[in-house]
Amino acid sequence: MKTVLFDYPKSASFGRVLPKSKIYEHARPSTAVKQLFVRQVEKIVWQYKLAPETVNMKPTRTVPEIQVFRIALKTGELKHVVLHCIDQAIPFPILYELWYEGKIQVVASYKRPSEADSSKWLVSDYFESVWLSSETPRPSLPVVLDLETLYAQILTALMPFPAREGEELQAQVGRMEQIRSKQRELAKYETRLHKEKQFNRKVAINTDLRKLKADIRYLTRRLATVVL
Image (cartoon, rainbow, N blue to C red; front, side):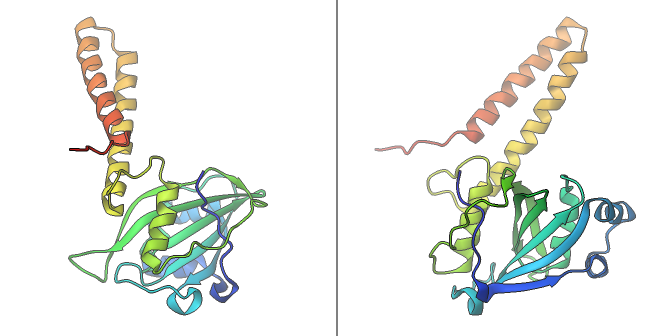
């Protein structure tokens, strides 16, 4: 498994509790999302600010800084809509460390400024590690020149399938989202097949299932380089 937990430098320490009310002010979540915050979130700490002056890495237009949030959970579950709400409130890429009963899970989305409106940020699906012991050794941050490369390395380590040769981060994220979409569709077809009684309809559903499975195999496959 690739490294997703790091020993962030002391120079990047921020260590401020982020009140839920501040998130509500900026993101304006629905009542249902506020209830999730109350039921699932114990405390949010803005633990680190990875910026040029704190980690000696160059900023880029898409990754001027990276924030690291530690979220103490009341239960072992956190709905991604809660993280999306925080991402709406904070205009920087964020890495989340979820803490619960001596375990840590790292979660992040691919977050980037909108090309149409640079004041708005686009947020992809979320990618997450397995739950790790809080005693897991933390290596130092990788030696890279800029924050965008660091962000890409961490996000790639969280993705369930590796990048294809020459595949850029945005394309890889899009492929991961396609895989998830087709996996959800596959689950629906499998449920329909289980409930269906008519033979001819079962045949049609099985045809669709085979197509979906083939699509997923292709999307998850690491394509070989073609040598001419």
